[in-house]
Length: 233
Image (cartoon, rainbow, N blue to C red; front, top):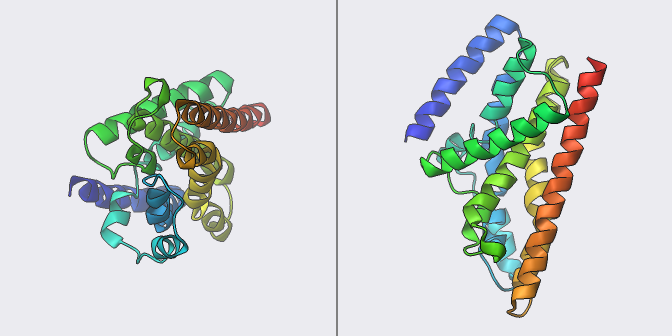
């Protein structure tokens, strides 16, 4: 309930900023956060199974009705940290760059862990994995993946802040879904595949290791993009 109340308060602040700054970015970001739940049942299915899913279960997950209440809870956990960075950037209190980008990513991880600890969001799909190799917790992996999505959104928000409203909406609204696909689907693929292989420690270790490497690659690409923004500015 508290998460929904926070969402309504943030919508109020976002509309006020739209009126003050003549910029709907914050409203679009919150709506995009809500739309990110469209594929949530699908990702939860993939991260909770240990056998090859049937076509019926995949179709059922993809056709799950849109949960409005769940969408309100999901409006801000991945988008709010990125919106804060955009606001700091607009007021020249934050500059994109290599070191600031990496430091910001670490802050995002900490915020995701805190929000999950306080129960202000539904557990991200990777949190359903249970015990992982190398003594890593599923909650930490979920925080890393969620922070990567937020980090990517941060780059997108800064890039499109001066777009026309229709172009901004077209760029922002699908982004949480796209980044979710890249992080949960592409970066998480080695780990998901390793869970379908015969029981053994090595497949699980290799799968987790490759997933962490792919997450690191995503972070490096986003950091490089932020660094280029700094040089352009």
